[in-house]
Length: 87
Image (cartoon, rainbow, N blue to C red; front, side, top):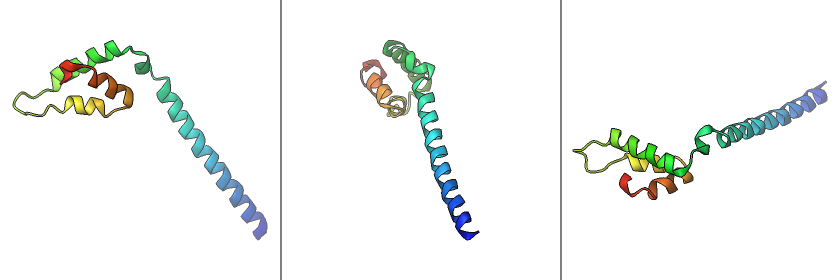
């Protein structure tokens, strides 16, 4: 009986690892097919500028909006850096 319990625990551990891997894969897949990824850089740039205009506090020297937008992902960082009006 102890041997069977050990075997079943090993099977359960393997299934748990597979489950975790599949959840990670599903999460990554969902992120890859998100509608925002289909927006062209020009549109995202305009959205960034609008966000920046609405979140810029004039009496604070450092505008954090470009830094925040640029920290989301490499694509957004590239777009933010290539949008001079954002800075």
